[in-house]
Length: 91
Image (cartoon, rainbow, N blue to C red):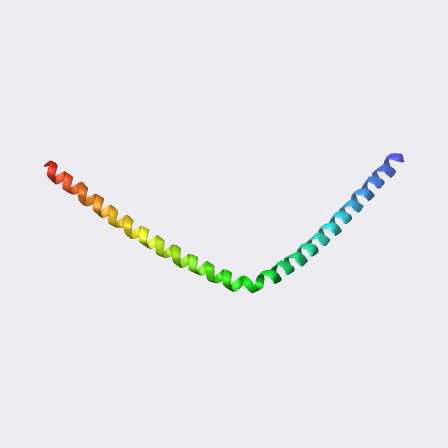
């Protein structure tokens, strides 16, 4: 009889703790939604300038990448030409 009462008490405690945890997490989600709203509101006026900076960085990176690719191709051709010239001199 006492064992059944103890099991029921433990089940009630477990159910109560689950409900408390569920409510607490629900409140935390609401809290973070509010925080996110205010942060977005503060950042929103600057979004256009951030996008412009991002676009200019992309343009610069693509220009640098194309220059590096061109240099790499030229260096490869130059290296190949030197190798062929050495081979011809050796023969």
